Length: 449
Image (cartoon, rainbow, N blue to C red; front, side, top):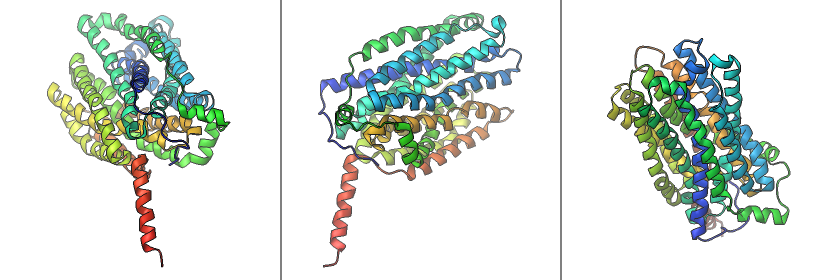
């Protein structure tokens, strides 16, 4: 763990709430952009952009373009991480939001395969890549603006605000989709209704830019700039000196991504296509789980400030591994209440992990390389856990019986993440100081006289 070279920057003040709210709003908007694609991929993109495929193959192809966004995210974190470590956290907030918003609006404008043939899925692929590039930079900038402004004893709480953003973005994306599903016929939704959530991203991006216009640069970056200690090549420094930490954090976060997209993306497709569940019912079940996770996030973050980041992550990963078989069993009932219970349980497990990550990952790196290191590790977890999960789960569920293979797959990733977190240190500053004091006292007590 890399300790901050300077004391905690500022006491709690009204400006802290304003900063955290701006970070939350931005992550909500950017993840709205990302999630609205996942929902569309589960519901309509297969037949519209891959019509010559079978229904299963079309869904797999749509999820393939979905996965490209995850592959782009580490590249985006490296690109915007360089900007954040060299030129400041604030420019990252603005540039990443603009890129993701423009790419999302453009997705809503792409003609279908019936209109322009092969160019349609190719354009979809390129725009999804740009979405992922922007989102890869968003998380690092948003989290560091809150973490580096926050008082030490409440860093976990304030850093959880950007972590609530993905849940809000998901609820917004699926709420709009749900409203359209309830008011449009299937033919209308497939013809033009699915485009409306993508076009709405333009207005949301403008609102986000307005909210972030007055965000101040963090005290720690200003101190680095004034002292001339900024990293010349942050990514190179991270890869050379912290490659093991990058791999561990990527593996540690794989379960959170895998379970989240298993619940929110794969289960939508599985429930509607295999179980014959109503699309509206599936959306409501998933949205219930995400809503509960959003409420739990700040609570778990406060517990992380008190008990430590690492114990919360270990508990969350262990619970993930144990809950996946009950989740699949409850999903298989095709009944709304059990399916909602399964989604709530799964998302509470990963919410316990994600709640403290906003403080945990930045605390693992020195400020000079923090934007790059934290963002690359976070988004590498997306590649490991999120990129392939809808594809693998869809393939494993291609049968007549319950998809126990999906449960084993998700539970196995939970165990891998558990091991990775076990190999990472605790970073809560107060607990680290207590441990150091205890070790010093024990050493003095056993020293020869």
